[in-house]
Length: 434
Ligand code: NDP
Image (cartoon, rainbow, N blue to C red; front, top):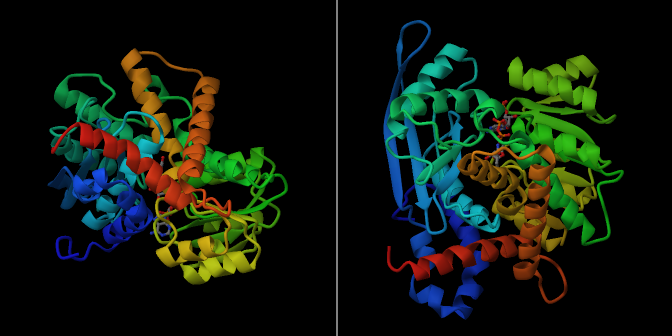
């Protein structure tokens, strides 16, 4: 804590992993002696830079850019870029740290990183977003590359931003390479990448339900967020026979007891991705309830799928979920549950899939996008979806392998942390003190 003062989210992420790993490392002194966890908690490199740009009024704006290159033991750094006013070093270090374990779990050769800026794309014109992205990439391009560090999207960074970033990289380097993932279909993107995180979160939840001979059929599902992950989570739940009754954004949430069906979801996608409007408009359009400045966890559900942001379910909300009969939480977002909320899930032995396992589908298909770029090939929708499903099943198997307790309960949190750790730790041991 003295070394990283004030980095609350980073402490939280490292603390959670350390708790899972303590006994495992005691039982395997080779990891302890080589100080693997201590080394994994220190980023290999952090780049912080000034991002000056000019807004539509001709005024100069200054933001801060970051890239945290956390661990490259098993492959090039890989992880998203987040553009959001709350971005700071603590948040990006927590995300980069989690990413190392997540990428390891995918079984693909990817190290971990994360980056972004405190730039807020909301209420900015396309021209402003483009000028910001070009300035951001002018510096970032010196530090990334298809074999070094391959960023992707995250909160506030979708297809539009990846396009502007890729265009500037290509212009600066005069090369067309797979330096970013989440690209458009016409210029190197993979089918199913936009869907992957949401679909994967639902596939993972489905695997968890299967261990109790259950499924999504007829389940009432609460989802938070209304961005990329929330949208495709909703689509897949509908496909598997569940009913999504909530969506949210940073201003509040909507409750639609009739369910957010394909037609209504289309409205949400247009509202959020094209009009860049607020979820409140859904309530007006379909006569649903709108709760300003609240989160959806008080609504009765069987399955909860948090898909917005970190620390969006606290202890009281977790207790409320359980009281209302929730049997499964699968995290589309990164670290959406506070540590004491996780304690509530584990104490009550519900099915709990932590983000680093449950939302690994996005980075998995990013890995598949890198493979397709290297091969200069494009796989079909079915091929990519098949790979995604298999990877989510493999991650589930790994969690069971390392997380099954004596009484048969599966602690997915421990399973994901230990399963993700082993591969990276072995690579670090083999590569010596670097
Ligand atoms: P988007 O920007 O597409 O959507 C984010 C959604 O969350 C929006 O509805 C946004 O509301 C809401 N939100 C953001 N910040 C807050 C906040 N502080 N409080 C309340 N609501 C908030 O991002 P994604 O869907 O891509 O990402 C969502 C989560 O999933 C993040 O935790 C991300 O790290 C994680 N994730 C994403 C992956 C991906 O492939 N995209 C991969 C793995 C994890 P508003 O519109 O008001 O901003």
